[in-house]
Structure formats: C-alpha cells, structure tokens
Image (cartoon, rainbow, N blue to C red):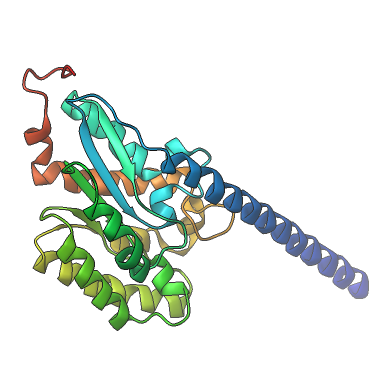
Length: 254
C-alpha cells in the first residue's frame, strides 16, 4: 500500500513538473513572438497632427510591452491613452526602446536616436535595469555609471523608473542595490522617480506570479496595468498634465 501511494505521488509530481515545463516553454514561444511583432510595431513612426503631444519612451522589453497579450496593453500605450484623455489632445508615441537592452545599450544606441529626434518631446519615460540584473558582466557600479550618462542626456523632468524587484534572492539583492542607486541619481538630475521596485516587492512572492507572463520574467497584462498606474500617479502629481492640456479643455485642432 505504501509503495502504491509512493508511486502515485511520484507520478503526480512528475505530471506537475511536465505541465509546468510545457507552460513555461509555451510562455517562452509567446515572448519570442512578442519581441519580433512588437518591435516591428514600434519601428513604424507616426507623424500626427500639428497640435499632437509627443511622448518618447526609452528602455527595454518592458517598454515594448513584451509579455502583454497585445502591444496596446503594455504600459507605454496605456500612459499614452491616459495622457490623451487627460489633456484632450492627440498623443503620438515614439518608442525607442529595444527588447534585451541594458543600460549600456541605452547609452550606445537609444540616446543617439533621442538626440536626433526632429521635435522636442512633451513627455519622456524610461525603464531600464532588469537586464542589467540578470545578464552576466553587469554590476551596480556599471549600472550607476550608465544611468548617470542617460539621466544627464534626458530633458529635466523625465519620468524614470527604478529597477523592479526579482523574487530570486540573489537577483533580488542585485535589483535592490541598482534601484537604490538609480533613485539617488534620478533626484540628482532633477527627474521624477517612478518607484517600481517598491511596488513589485510589495506584491510579494505569491502575487508576483499573478502579474507575470508565461516566461516568469516579463509582466503580463495585469502587471503592465500596475506599471502604467505607477507611472501615471507620478505624472499626475508632477503637474505636467495641466501644462499640456488643450487651451479650451477639449480636443485641440490640428
């Protein structure tokens, strides 16, 4: 009897592992499809009307929306939609982010594109650091040095996220150190801190999975909703929305 129960327990455990592995592999396939499809989407530039607001996003795969069920459900489009509703103006998003980017990649690849933009952005957001946490060869010191360059190059008053929390202990410590250094630099360069690390850490181990896509790394739709809310709370509190609102309180012409 004990042997039979042990066999059944072993079979059940094996089935759970197999199911978990299959789910993870499917999640990874979905993520790779998102990387390709969402990259193409954001590579298409939109002109917009003369009175449109210009929102520029920099960052990594999170800014691309990888992990969301549709590109429109990432945090960047959600911010754009909130900005359009709050100001009564068309919002054109220029997303310079790249999946897999580290802070060094932003310095090398995205900042030159930012400097060459043929317009002055009305709103700038950045999330970076998740890949610095997990990719070998990156340290809190190298991240800090890159962030110093990035934040110096961005216009004063940009909205900058610190580094989200990771539930794996060694990565959690790394992300905490990087988030701490980022928050100091954000204040020094007179930008607005979006405290993603605190919010993701407060979600805790069990709720972490509720906000995470099938690859157990990227946010899902619910996770990106939380990120958008975190950014938007800081954007609203900054007072910038009032300065960008259409003069008549309605939809601007143009």
